[in-house]
Length: 169
Image (cartoon, rainbow, N blue to C red; front, side, top):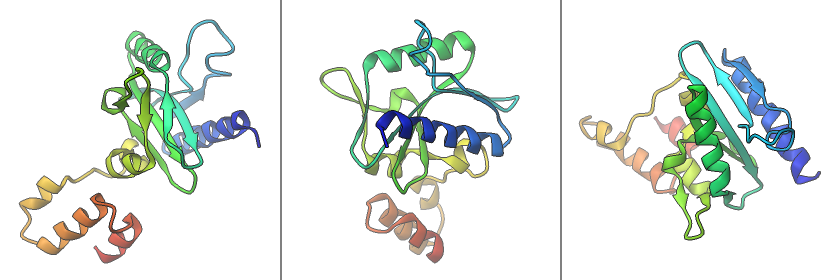
């Protein structure tokens, strides 16, 4: 399957998931190619929050975005009144979301997301759509249950998969 067809399939997958979560959502047709204006891949809103999303997927390699892609997303989002987000999906993983300002910037001015960064620092889909809320290790630090903190630290450090931690917790 060509990279473009796979990317299109992933974008449709994201659109369907957002729709199922109660968002009004649309995929920009051939975003970037159908018009001279740069458009985000997906627009989504739930009546309270509106997003302009650039969606990228990869088999496992780091995902790169050009500085121009990110600047165009920020420009569109600001003028549209939406929050700019980068959505990344690695094979056999869920979608993770980032504000463009939270991405690693390379010396060449590109933006990069590694798989391990997405899993450790990205906003997962349930949190993105408001189904769950992230709890930080600092917040757990006030909890006397040190075992819970140790499990969460193991997930953060990559020593335990999230699924295993959920089973233990």
